[in-house]
Image 1 (spheres, helix red, strand yellow):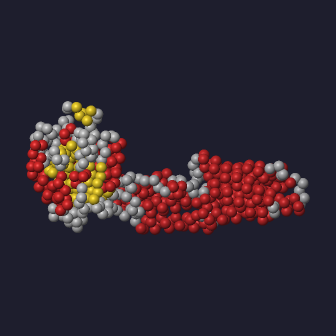
Image 2 (cartoon, helix red, strand yellow; image 1 turned 60 degrees about the vertical axis):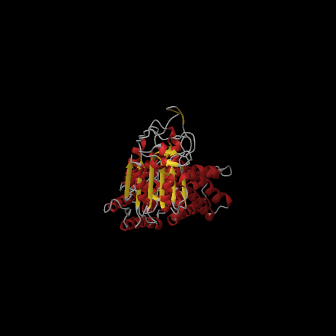
Length: 545
């Protein structure tokens, strides 16, 4: 079994008076060690922290750390402190007893670390260096003096190695003991720690890789100061190196849910929202924990605020299953929801959908008066539409009748749906009214102006209903519930045929009614009333209570 190991080295005190005393590396090392060692964060198997140790102990610790490892062992070596170059350009990591005049014997040469890493059997090595050339230091911060430190190049080669550095170039100028500009106190390590605590999970999958951690720290450092540019070097890396996994749900960043799902969540009809709950449950069981976090947040909102008791109950059941699944093992990734809970919710949703599509649902006593008002409103709208078309025949009558009649019926639909909290804003009301007005014009033009006759009137009113329902329910709803919608369209087609039969065939041609406006008003009122009645039964009975 592979191990996850870390060696953290930091130095704040130096016997060489030419090396500035530092404060940041000690804090850096302790905090970085904390997040790696914590069972609730990175959960490394062993983390060793060395602060202010002599070169002999540091060298021995590095040699031991990299020796006798397995190929799959993950090794993280971290250093924070001064980096020093000799007159030949070789890089050394300065420790407590480092003497700039005796670097080979009192400091840790980069070649020593590189050779130990090359000879290690581990093929998953991460070297993190938060240091720069020490010649500029007198005030306890790490910065470069005027020449590139070339940190990454000093540790190149190797197999399966990633090197992260805080900076690799000149960033500060000095005059005597004073720095020109501002210093930054270990920003790189600060953001590495912040990233491992959860912020670097950029894709919301509940894992933090080395690449994600570096990308997060790089962007944060660059935003904080343009004077520091972290760098990354990788050599023959195979696959991702994961530093943290099995993040708790509350630590996962939520991500944006798919737009069609968001539309379904806000749909005015409860069976559509029930379907959205099913999709949210699937996301809870998915591998993308960012999506799972977003799904959980939405389910909590649905459970609390949805005006359909069935939908809110399904959301609550899903959330309760999450809590039950988390109880047995807090540190393990839980099964988000039990299969039994899924089965119950799916069956309930399927029953609701089947009831709607089969047209078998019956309005409750509380919805019966609304069905009556719905029918009356559409009947009155038809009354005016029929009269207006007859009075303005040949002078844009179909336009006037379609717009005003359709808008009137659409307004009745919107007002009743708003009263039942099926729609929740003024925008939805306007959309419904506009859709029925446009549908009225198109339906009237097809049924009366193109050919006339019973069949044409039926086709025209079917088109009228299609446009109106699309604006009221949305095209996705029409497609997904085509059987239930077909019942409504059939009712409107029958209503259109009845308009023509009563008005034209019976009242005008058979009974010779002189007032054709009244004849068309009566027939249209009856036909539209039938369409409105069937539509009301479908919409209100399946709203969800």
